[in-house]
Image (tube, rainbow, N blue to C red; front, side, top):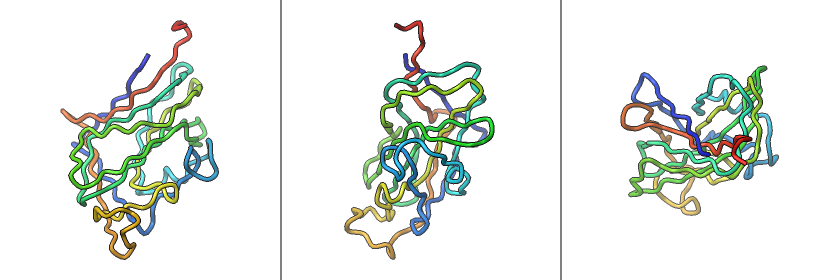
Length: 188
């Protein structure tokens, strides 16, 4: 079955500032080096990464299949990227990526909510651990840095790049949510 985690907050949106000259690095997952699951604790501590962390799990959680992230997001530039990473947080604070997705939004796309499909996963999150969603405006060098100008990465110059402010809605009629493919042993 599919379950969802929905984030709400007291403010109408969270802000994320992407600096194209200091992009969030790719680490682990299907597109980073090293590939696979790795400790991303330091990345999640960056000021240009938004994190949303669940309460500790009351029981083991088995995720089998496709994870989908839906977000109402806008930016102050013609184009922007959003990288979303689902991770497991251990009681000692270490964070290990489970799966991720990436989306480029070009001028005129006007798609809200944005749907970001993650890589399929097959994982057990242990009781007592937490789920975390991390958002950033880059995942470099796995994906080219978005200059914010609306130009294709191959046609843009770093000196023309702009700092991008993303507004992630999280209240009222604009919920942000993660659709999880939860497997229960009684579903055989």
